[in-house]
Image (cartoon, rainbow, N blue to C red; front, side, top):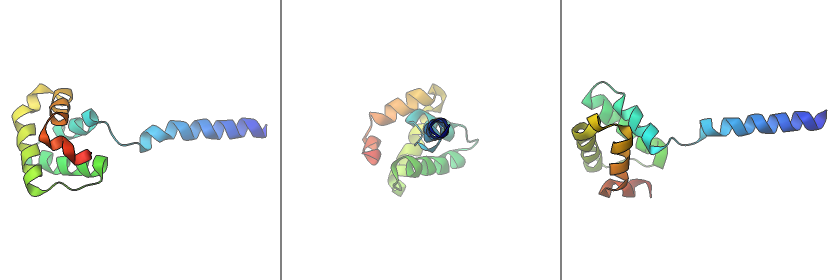
Length: 94
């Protein structure tokens, strides 16, 4: 019986790990795109980068990322995330 409880606790802990994991790039961009205004999206970019990479973007990099998101947000989260990973902004999370 004790072994079953240990296995149940382990299984529960393993299912909780994804909830604590960092979001994927697409999830982070989706969170940004879900904001209703350019200012709110810019703030969310900063939050998502801090959450994913544990860094704060410089004002210049935040402006670049925000301008890119605003110019391309109609193309969808997956496309935006892929393009960011291929751009000079990708160094932030390295």
